[in-house]
Image 1 (tube, rainbow, N blue to C red):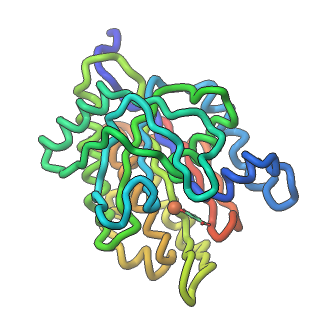
Image 2 (image 1 turned 120 degrees about the vertical axis):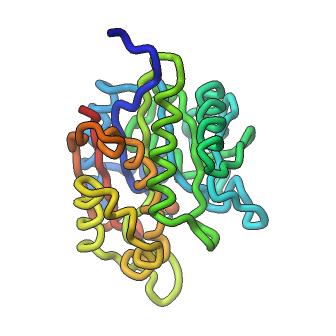
Length: 288
Ligand code: DHB
Ligand code: FE
């Protein structure tokens, strides 16, 4: 039977450290420091070429760039035609404009809000390293990004932040929304941020390899259990910015097995320390 509706084909998870973007933009990826990190994404760039979707639903967090700390939505979906790479203080990154998919985004907004999740709807939203660095890691330096992207911003910067459980349930709602869209689009859902890191205070520089690897194990095999971990555990064990990992649960919650289907296949797994002040984690899960 031919496909009539949109479907999720795979999910991608990756850290989004700004220094990674700078290393690419300044031509430093081959240095002793950076080469081992970028090696972990060689498979991914090839995989992305072979599995280019029609749309990427990209879960990330804004770092007080598009949203000032005066007004911070917990969840914001980008419904615009396009999104400008943000100026984070040293000029916008030299990367392509991000082209949106307003029709699918508006459908997802309608469906997810009707499933009782409060989303802010953004018609103008500059996108910072949280979104552009994952695109760079997965796609390299193309003239244009390979497909439209729906930016989905999550507040993990200003307390209170959403729980892992809520993020996971939101992922389930996003799956239902995508599957009810009546065009045969192949959609990838990406979860970005993490892994363990703390950028300020006495614990700045904190890395917790055990936590990170256990998180990835559990995200793959038993995401419902991972979703029960309270946010304070991430902060205690993975550092104040380790809370970014709850965004991976949104992408994971959108996969088939959570809705009673088959488990995803682990196409790629990578972990590397250090990447700037953080531990770099990366997974590609394919739907079966
Ligand atoms: C840094 C910033 C981030 O947003 C992040 O997720 C990791 C690292 C940084 O400034 O080094
Ligand atoms: Fe971040």
